[in-house]
Length: 165
Image (cartoon, rainbow, N blue to C red; front, side, top):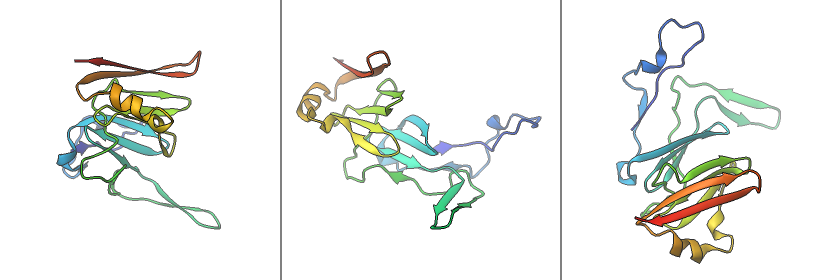
């Protein structure tokens, strides 16, 4: 379950972040595991669970036409249904550990250690582990390992470490 509070205004006397209204939540499918991370990028909210990642689009929503862009407002902050990144029976694209994700100028990267995959989000999803190293990551990111991800801005490289538990 993902719960959200009303919008807080600068002029507000009360702290709206502590106010939770009755219907201000969305239920994610429980069979995908616990929520393990949240990331807001390019007006998209990525909600990681142990087995998959959901993409939510907070309001406002827009429709591009040949003349201009039309914005549609909704009373609910997360009024649109969630979209699962990849719809599979067993799950795909999940995040098992909070430290297995990093943001850089090249995008947002996370590791699905259960499946030996590394993903990059830049507005679209790229599977980095499929770029010539698929079998390496499948073997080096076993399910029973601790994975950490970092970014080195000096050499512009992604650092992925794995340690068996």
